[in-house]
Length: 92
Image (cartoon, rainbow, N blue to C red; front, side):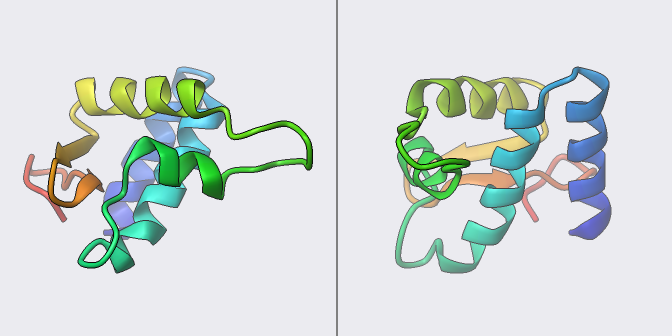
């Protein structure tokens, strides 16, 4: 999974998308609890507070996650939510 996450982070860096990179890191960590809680945009946004009082930025996080999904770097299912996509195109 480490090489796959590096690929996602390199993509984010090349597109100057720091929020997408932070969201991808959160998705990678949240995959550990997907059996109990799906990794949706709201949960990722709640994990990404960078300062008090800013709010969740759910709309921006959702857009970043969808951009990564369109680039085939994330997968999405209703049951588990977002997941880092392996370099072979399957989920990790």
